[in-house]
Figure 1 (cartoon, helix red, strand yellow):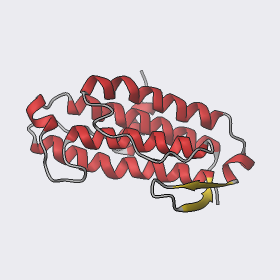
Figure 2 (cartoon, one colour):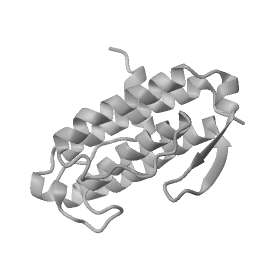
Figure 3 (cartoon, one colour):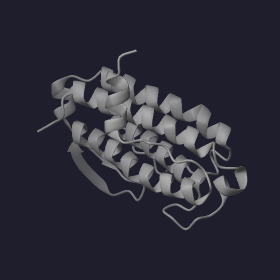
Length: 169
């Protein structure tokens, strides 16, 4: 079963919201802690945040029929500002791409090569769900890293998102 466009729209909006909270949470960590290797996942808060953003971009590229041969990394986005300026553009591009899809388009099988040149095939909707899941996995790691570095983690649970979204103003 392929996720509906409406469900994917809501979930990608959640990804945008949660990633924004992680950026704000990471801002509570001084530079020395933000760039320090923690030996969790990719290493530092900055490296992991760049990884999350770059993974979203490479998957969007694959959805578009491209097969990039490398994943951007912290050398491509060496500062907080470079990451923070780029990431909202990635979120918007993913949402724009989804906006162009039909139910049939979401069910179509995408063939892509990973960065090692291996070929894979999967329905577009399932690949979009993978990107959503990947971000949730890493946001948990980021919150741990932010706490270890003396910062204030962000409450990025989906439940928090829907409660904020449905709260009367």
